[in-house]
Structure formats: structure tokens, C-alpha cells
Length: 114
Ligand code: 5GP
Ligand code: ZN
Image (cartoon, rainbow, N blue to C red; front, side, top):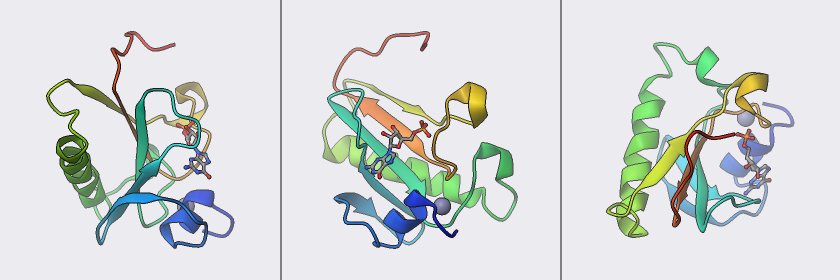
């Protein structure tokens, strides 16, 4: 999608340290980390948000969680625990209109979120 920043990262058009990549998704560290570990997992294809997932794109969510599981083990925060969250729309606090899952770890995370 034209000037979507996450499409550009997915297409390797913006230099970003990719920490995981497969045929469907990639993961990279958040620019503005909210926890000692904070990375994003995104589909390579442009999907705006959970609202626009459909039968043809639901499998990418499976790929996202596979990546999360692999990285949680690799970065060794699987046992301590972590949070996976996707913000949707204005009230959800979504600022980038390309589906992404935040993975936060490395500290005790408060609940409920703000
Ligand atoms: P949202 O607010 O949409 O749920 O999350 C977007 C996230 O993307 C934010 O946490 C923000 O810090 C991160 N972000 C925005 N632009 C970039 C970028 O160019 N590179 C990286 N690594 N993260 C970004
Ligand atoms: Zn995009």
C-alpha cells in the first residue's frame, strides 16, 4: 500500500533490524519501547486491522502467533510471561493502519491497560 510505513518495512525498503521473518510475517523491535522487550509482529501483506481480516487472510493470524511462540522461546521470556496485543481503530489506540501485534515482556505488566 502506497505510503504505509509497515509495508515499507515488510518490503525491506526501510532499514530495520528484523528479528524474525518467514513467508507470511516479520517481527522487529518497536521504535518507542514500552517494556524491556517490545517488538511488533506484522503480516507482510497490507491488512488494515482486525476489522478487515477475512477468510483469505485469517491464516496470517496463525503465522503471527507461531512467530510469537518462536521468539518467546528464543528470547527466553516464555516462562516469565508476556503480553500480545493488537490495537484497533481510534478507541483502541491504533496509530499505524497496518495490522500489527505488540509483544511486551521483561517486566510485570499492569492490568487493566490505560
Ligand atoms: P499502534 O499505536 O498502532 O498500536 O502501534 C504502532 C507502533 O509502531 C508504536 O508502538 C510505534 O512506536 C511503532 N512504530 C511506528 N513507526 C515505526 C517505525 O518506523 N519503526 C518501528 N520499529 N516502529 C514504529
Ligand atoms: Zn501496510
